[in-house]
Image (cartoon, rainbow, N blue to C red; front, top):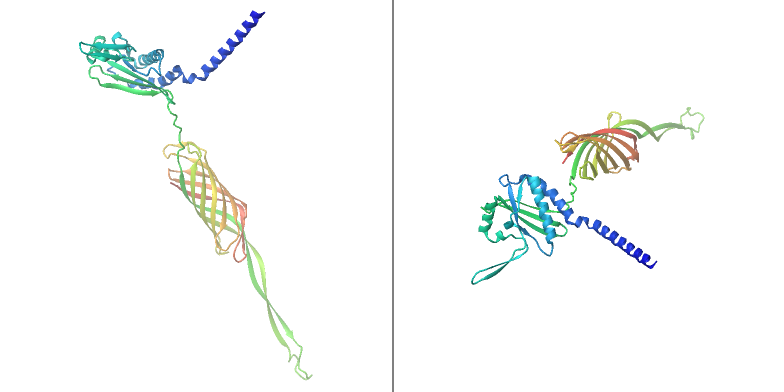
Length: 396
């Protein structure tokens, strides 16, 4: 029974250890060499397409690395993966002459008077002597000597630099560097800030009350104090008095109004495609009565608003803009001068971009509140709730 209990304890501990190891492996997968080499090969393989056509036979003769950062097994694994890419994606013949084989041994070179100890880590024996290197390259028909440099850095991960040299001229014929975890450059929002000037004309109906003034007169005869004598002539003592009274009355006149406006809009994009914008607008309106013979009426209004744009068509490359854009503007309009009243207006519309800088929009307007404006002489102007108009748009 005791043996069975001990076996059960060992089994549980072993399962927990294996589970921890698997979890650790999953957690560190992106930090492992296989993952990082895979990311480097995704960059290396397409770049091998421009490898020199005159270099077809290569050999790795030198690998630069720190023994504190890489083990021999890791270096061999990285080398094998680089050679695989060069064979399969550049169509190269990869040679491995023993004289050009990088190693990590010390070499002692001496003569009668000197003794020199060379650190051969990552270097081949032939690399010590340029003449020997050229001789070995000639012996095996090596057209390109490859030098690898390996680094581990944070947060870049694994960094590999490859340099290919002509064995005779020592000319570097191809070189490149690759990072397993290249820094992510977050796309910045295209600062497509735009300013728009619009010239518009719109029409609305109104009810216009004129407060008219007119006068009436009455005449009264005063017969008191007529002549004392009966013999006075009839009516000889009568006085006539005229009285004038002022009256006011409201006259309702329905009038069509024309609104001429100029508006400035500043807007910024809400996405990378510049398909939607939000902005502010300020404008000036001159409202005039259309039938100038019936009533002569002019009023100036100032506008402040918030506007939203949303593209509803594909972007046109020729003008670098969306051809059709829906917009909705909410603004307040108030009269200038000694007049009273504020209007809140919703203006939905469609803007058609005809070129990069010129457009045309058609819109409707809906007065949400405050449609009555009181003038200085107590006349009142009441807008109908709906209207429509057109804008010419200049964008810069």
